Image 1: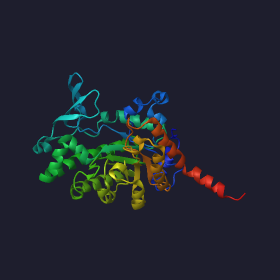
Image 2 (image 1 turned 45 degrees about the horizontal axis):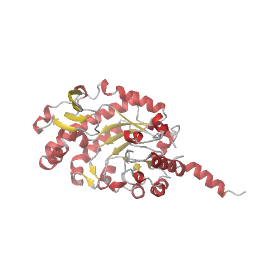
Image 3 (image 1 turned 30 degrees about the horizontal axis):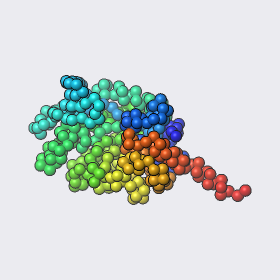
Image 4 (image 1 turned 135 degrees about the vertical axis):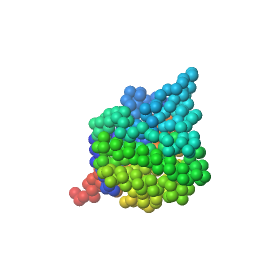
Length: 370
């Protein structure tokens, strides 16, 4: 059962404002193609997954690459493709593969940093598809946030993750200079995206995967010293420009950094992964009124197992915790290991148990005297 998006703007605003929405909003990070391909239900194939299972908000992204003017195919051999992806690296991929293999990076030597100039954030080519997506999402009745990557993950694109983590230990001056340069570029993309989309009423998502299932990939002390000042500056500038909310997307166990993230002015987090120990009910109890949670549904164990009883037991406490706002429920992503039946079960439970206004009216009717 799909949810209608006709009231999405209102209920997302209410949830983000810690008010009880008429119904609990839903946001899915993404649907893997295999989720549809593995399905035997013709109705799903005949309609897009997004039509059948709509999210209540949209996150629209401009072309934030460092060098979008350089994106091109370099060579092709069979199913192997070598291309410049615009992030200061050459990548190898296969036509049937999801992940890519970086084979060369522009910033292979810290001494090159000062000479690197990113393409201007104001380039119109960055916003052509973005502008069309914004229009389409608004026509579908959805509130629009704009998206940028974060200073850690985008710095790893041009430098390499292992290299950047090593730099943070051995050459912190260079590492700080790199992430500051990247953060400045990203902030300008966000400000331009906000302006072109007129998305101030909702705001910005920053995607910065800096955690594993067990915790941050660097120490909290490193975050506090290197990244926290950048987040403070970025969030301050975004809100100073008029963005109402700033949400941080970070996979994995973000909990050791949450107090600092909130201090930086971050208003919400996503995807709140249960397999990484991120428990919506506990986090709502600890941070209610200070931090919105977007996500929380287990796509690693509960949904793939597909047991309706366990799905209900997993969902209902979260749905009740979101009754007074502060929660937009959803998953990180839905892959081919989640059956259509299991996914339908999850959405039906959310639609029924998360219909707060209808349930409240029904309860009032039952309690009223004859």
